[in-house]
Image 1 (spheres, rainbow, N blue to C red):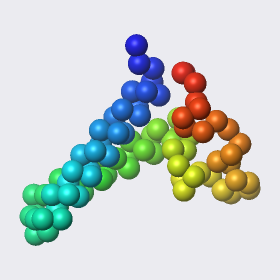
Image 2: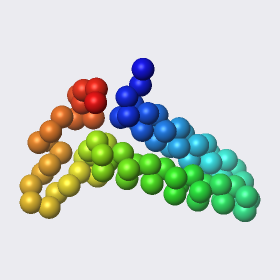
Image 3: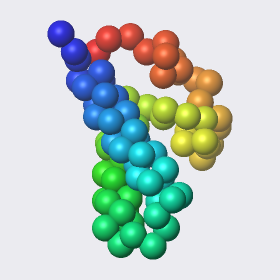
Length: 85
């Protein structure tokens, strides 16, 4: 059975896949307004899901890690090391 972290990550991965698919489509159809709307919607969805995931489970990449007072990326478990919640 999937835990909350795995479910959130799967949703994020699906949104990122759809966004990448839209990017590929727009490479060959750059003026397609429907494609552009789809791309913007998927980008918004992916960003929302990523923000929700990172708020609950921590940064997915070093580029998104907190760096206010210290380099937080190395202070906890990396995404692939995080245990089941």
